[in-house]
Image (tube, rainbow, N blue to C red):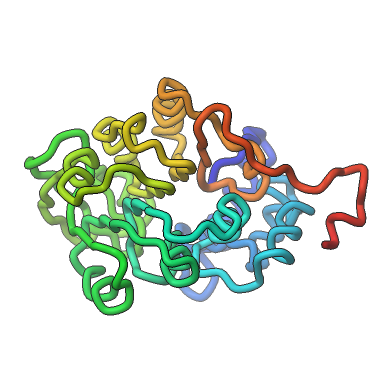
Length: 286
């Protein structure tokens, strides 16, 4: 998650969490770090108390009181979407790196509660059945989104769900690599054109370091999402920021303190309601 706090304390706490994760019920280091990013876990509380993560802030608590406590997304994404779109019906989403149809999904709520439709793309065929059975308004594609169509990319399969990547070293760093498979590529421009999609409301992208190439294959000025969320690992973060800045998108700063895994973008000039005023403490309880 994306949160600017590059200090020694954060580094030491992260190292400590790796050690803790390695010894807890066989979770392993990567799983321990993943758990430490979940606001519901005690590892997250330890990380926040040490100043290495957003605290369970007034903003986070406000989102939970207003939109929670249930969520299907991994962290606060579902509540952020409710806060931004304010009940918008029948929107269109593009979910790149969708993984499971429900568990950890950023778009399950949009389809099932607000009647949205769209496309879900993941390089792993295993997710197709869930979408076809439970997501009738979503078209699923087992493809690798990139800057060129009709090529192949080797995907290195990780023992830990959600960490398979086209970069073998990245997958190996987070978990054991258990195999590889060649996947056909497609650009978002080509896929959306083939599906007759002219514009989108929400773009979600989480593809383990492949985000810059996927964005390079998207004419964002043509499809103009109202909101985009992109997971931004340090290795590719600047490229992601540069892409959106070059296309007149700005960071939705409101959500920085409640999501340190992703960066949220909206077109320059867009408006999002601020959190309650700090001058009125009683507003945080509403």
